[in-house]
Image (cartoon, rainbow, N blue to C red):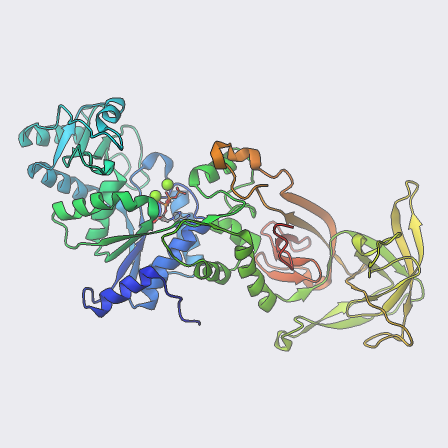
Length: 550
Ligand code: ATP
Ligand code: MG
Ligand code: MG
């Protein structure tokens, strides 16, 4: 495999190994199990697992599960499956932040004992008013100077369930005048009654905040480099404060990088949850979703997603990545690796009037034009075939190189035919063509004339009927929801086109879900889990060429 591409984080980590600051590096990928992973998470997974893998370190999978009401075990399992599918393994290093609830509680007691935390009775609205603004310092809470004994007693009673939700919090005692609002006595614990946590059940009515839990979890696991997205840059002083003030065994370093933003989609879990919940898509694994499960069902390979993550790089500058870049990663992979097949998506019957009725002819066709080692398959020919409707024009525009009345075209892997007759129904719609075969043209050019066009076909007798789902961008604008608009307004109502009665060459009968092919002249397709042995269902992964912005 190619050596990993470098970036500023890899350089920091390599320098820390070279200087002897660390003998081994340890990273973690910390998803919250409140939704499925998306392509943005893949960037973080490739960075964290990839760094550890290539530098002989370790990467933990840690569920950041401090916010129980939106989390569940289905999401936990889906996340594990997606990380594995992407090609990474946490071995025995699977953790839950909730594993640390008891120790986090003890560390909070330690903070109280050191005079660094207190129980506050301001409600959310009052707390906001006391917090101040970017330009104005905050005001001390009237509860800030309770005695250690009083705080210890109240905190214990908070845990025991004596107080209702929202009536008390535990806050760090740092600095209400700090220019960094995150240091103005941030909340460390809140009360939540009546939630059943997917890991700890009803054991707790007191839940630690992310800002308190994350640094301590990192330190307990001996994480050396804690990589997170840029919006946590302002939280870093609080991260450092937490690990400096409780008795944890190590001092991890937080480093921020810019999150992935991708054109023509949305990436926040809240919006993805709404797309699923409101029925704009058919589920988390809908092939139009930017989720890992959606991309898998769309036909993306793990290698193409990893390659995309390498191509976008890791920096500190926010930007918007073009969809074309994601698509070129999968197109490059499938161009090299997907076997070629013929599939007629909009069938038009052609009767080859001079072709012998009882002839049983099979064409030997290469599975890949540039890779003979992929072998060949045999494609049955016949007197009645289907071609694509768009490959015939009664009144062709200039430059049309496919079939026209009286004109010739080559059938891919087979003969040259000439269209002799156009048959229409009462409404004037073309329903069938009659054509004649030049039997001298198998594997050689016809005598004395040039036939430019080549079209694909499927024998009517042998073809397999299939459903094909064509996907277009889920949103009609590059940045849905920009400028305060509702992102739903940008949903493309034509993002899915279902074609039924498509005709596939018989080699495609009985494909397994997940098998990928190039349908010649159409694009790359993957068999969907909805397929049955007799009736395949295919999803369009990506077209043959980049058509974005066209
Ligand atoms: P969301 O805002 O979509 O809910 P999140 O950051 O809250 O995302 P988490 O499950 O907490 O989602 O994310 C797990 C890890 O993945 C975090 O370290 C986070 O920084 C990283 N991550 C999430 N989204 C992106 C993204 N778009 N680009 C890069 N990394 C991301
Ligand atoms: Mg998060
Ligand atoms: Mg989140």
